[in-house]
Length: 232
Image (tube, rainbow, N blue to C red; front, side, top):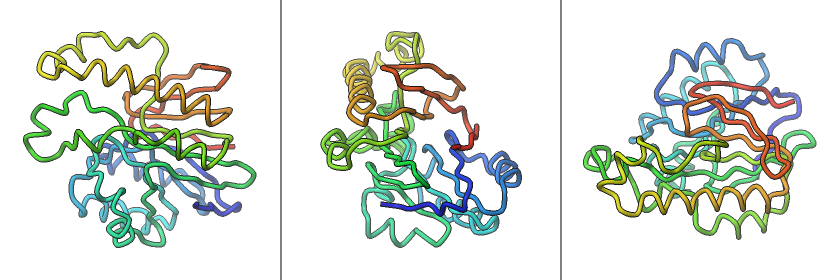
């Protein structure tokens, strides 16, 4: 479990996607005592990508917590010995299912997502990890062990009205016969996470758009790339 100092302001940010200019602008707008939790997708293919983020966090003297996205090398998060080597006083790599206490709020984080391009160029370049990218299959079991929470944070989620069957996904499904079914199963898993967690609010990134809604009585928000919001 991670405990964020009560004296800190806590911010959430959508996918990073190697956008240091926008990240720096965000950090400069934050108060001196603050922590930032990023919902994933740093395009962290090599350790040096995370070292750069650590340097940015140290320069601004803030705590930075990183969830894993589907564009990030899972080994840096899932291999805890390797994660500890990369972690500093300013940078923490959250486990695929993790717990954060902030003031009187209990936050549970669940990383990962299915990649629509998992059989394409990114895979050929060695920057895609189809077996490890998705939400952990035992995430519901792990979440039950952690108990209910106030806020659920995931990398992926569900946007009302966004269908699994669309031209974008179809363009990849033509060479990946299991893609659509896997995305459908992922959606079911996200719904279970919302219900089992008992959360009042749910934040996610992944879709590169800003959206708010309500699902199962839960306030839901998708954050766009580098979009930032403060938890009150």
